[in-house]
Length: 320
Image (cartoon, rainbow, N blue to C red; front, side):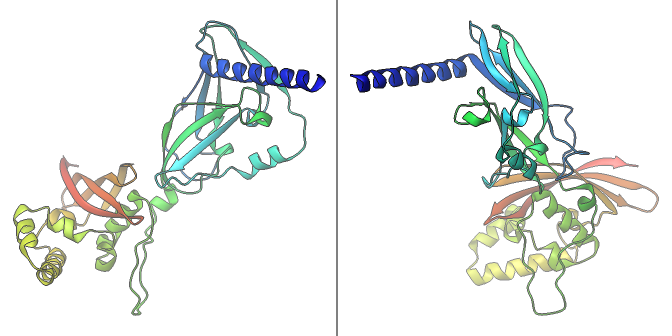
């Protein structure tokens, strides 16, 4: 009899706990947005934070109650994945706090219908952002604190663009093969870095590096006439056309816009999904008595982890 009674009580408690969790999830909405959005770079949590404004709202018709730790690391988590679905790791500080035995101080928060509770957190205190990429970020809120991490509410998702650090972006370092028989190999770098290295290679007339991330076949086929002739050719004929196309580009006989040499450039924006992207670049051309300004849009596509340039467009912005 005691066992039966104990089983009934246990079942009741589980059902009550489940109902309370579902009720909280139904009546609470957690949302995030950027706070004082700026340019974000890898690392440097203190001087280049990614501040996220977090809001817990009562969307129900009854009082909403939850716990809020004084140290928010015991109340929330950030999750961030890049375009390859790789997850950003937690910071050492976060791991140390959660694995060290300590008292967690918290407050009971009560929100009436329509009320909100908000605060701002630095994402870089939670996640180790080491490299430039596009990340998709959401937040998990633990109404009963992290020690009951299976109970959580998920926020909306943000798209976070982390650009190469200013030092890296202005760097003139590009992969250069030493004078051996070694063949240059493209690296798994971000689209904006691909464009940066390609432009720098052109400025230095390093043709092997210039073509390293360029899909010559797609660039050749931008011209409808060339595309028709290329499609009608045999495999050998296509190889010959590609070789001739590359030679013509090097001699500046065709498509002069793509091989024009800017005196300086500035990457404006980078946008990409898992397989497609575009990079907008302001490029300046010194014509002696005046500076010509153009906006290049480079279109890139990922193949086996490598981003390749397959198309471009140019907008003339006048002179300076």
